[in-house]
Image (cartoon, rainbow, N blue to C red; front, side):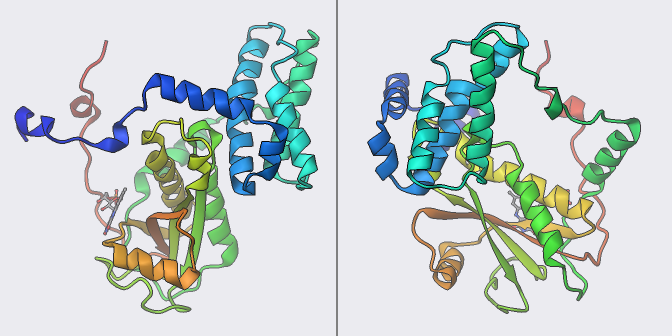
Amino acid sequence: MSDTNYNSFHDTCMDYQPLEEVMAIYQRNSALTEDELFEMDETEFRARMRERSHHTLEIQLYANQYRGKKLSDKQADIAKKFLRVWDRRGLSHDLPEYKYVTFLVDSAEKLSKGEPVDLSPYKPHEVTEQMEEDFFTILYERRSVREFKDQDVPDEIINKILDAGLWAAHGCNIQSIRYLVVREKNEPGLFKGSDVPGGPVHLVICQDMRAYKANDFTPNRNRLLDAGAAGENIVLAAHAAGLEGVWLTFPNDEFCDRLRKKFDLPDYIRLVTYVDVGYGDQTPHPPLRLSVDEAVLGRL
Ligand SMILES: Cc1cc2nc3c(=O)[nH]c(=O)nc-3n(C[C@H](O)[C@H](O)[C@H](O)COP(=O)(O)O)c2cc1C
């Protein structure tokens, strides 16, 4: 494509909202009263709690702890407001937001008093040479496999793979990812219309758009990237767990509507993409990649 042609192509998913607009939403979100937080939809409330505690506490806590600096005693105020509303709403203390935000607030309280905060329990294992080698073997040997054995995949493996998708990096910790799981044998033909025969288990990567609606100042570009990050974790985890799979594209709206209808999905659930998995029955030649030298456009 020539430069002239390219300039007429405008990809809105890369657009930024004006900074003033972003800041206005950001301030408004921070200033929501406890009554407003109490009354709003629970999914939006939880998504706001994840985002607010990330931007107004987690980042500052870690930065100050790293530099041995005290934290303002007001730094945890927004997170504490969410915790109060959490209890007022009667939500479970076993849910991840509650556990994580409680940890952040407890640590912030120590740091604001100038007490040391020990974050070493969360230090990852040291990566040994063997672990590194194993990781890169999984990464390079994962292939898009499109033919599968007639062998059932246990639910535990499916759940392990889906969990790997949830642990992908995710913009502003909003956590929009949701799934549909369809075993072909239970609903033969529901996925017809794909360009490949398909695997025995279809894993649909969805997003609950209420999570973004609640945080509508976050960059548009992050939304589909969030789903892409989950997809990559899923295909890698499938290979690591002894399965194979292929990442697939919904060919048209009718395909998605069929699934929507089957699961009676509301409009705020977006069906982004899907991955078919099963026990693989082919070992394709890797579609070879550009070299790093060719891919790097500049280095300073
Ligand atoms: C976003 C995305 C969409 C894809 N859609 C399809 C698809 O619709 N049909 C298909 O057969 N493969 C699909 N693939 C798989 C690619 O064709 C495959 O990853 C690529 O050819 C490289 O091969 P490899 O995965 O074995 O390394 C998709 C992959 C990605 C990341």
